[in-house]
Length: 112
Image (cartoon, rainbow, N blue to C red; front, top):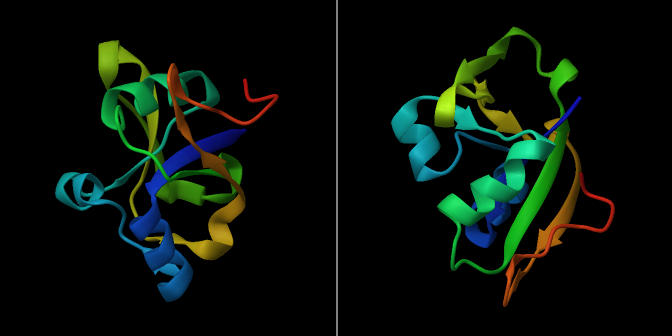
């Protein structure tokens, strides 16, 4: 199963440079890295990145993250994937730009 992380450009650049990250400030504060399923990603973008452009959408295979990935209740009781370790560049399957348009963020063609 694919899960997704939305990065701001500086956060993505840091991951590319260092090869790993503890996440965005909210991830560091909460003690885990936040991810979304395909069904949750649009709402995540709308809620947490409303007016932000130059975002990167990264896809990861949840099955390869091992026991450090926990599914925990969040918004409205929905289960969200949370990673309790640093995220590495090797964990990322692919990335795509997530541009901001007049009607919200433009998810890649074919995105669920």
